[in-house]
Length: 112
Length: 114
Image (cartoon, rainbow over all chains, first blue to last red; front, side, top):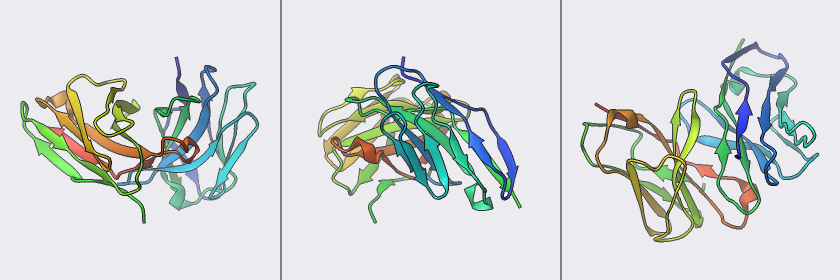
């Protein structure tokens, strides 16, 4: 089926550390891929997206590259800040089907 | 600022009660969605709607129904609340022809059934 698997949390890092949150997807259809972020007490916000292989999405210093060969869309940031503490969700949407399928979420905590 | 508004931030209801969760969007989006969010399970789709008076079941529709009488409003109904429906409920909306923009989410309703 259409699924998304992301790394288990929680993840705790020191400020300015390098961040990677892994995400892989099942290779069915031609999905668009997304990362959403949920800050404490809020709904989800779109962080970045990629619609085809080799596309790179980027926003707020975060990046993710759509890798068809490894069916992955890992989220990276070179230097995290305390304000990046949130829950991050990887998601997919197949072409012609407007439903998003989400991963289980990864809670990220950045300590000063 | 465009938004999706959920009528209640927190709700406490008794087992067996009929519960209405309301969601309103002001972006003229065609699509609207209801998800529930549970630790370790992520977001699971309950119901969605592509148009007024139209609804389709998501992955976990049992125990829920929905209503969409107007384009901007999408209601989730728990016909007889049970404790296993204690959860965070998230409403979202999107354009039908610009899926690359993703969804806009509301802030969520945390429902506790006692």
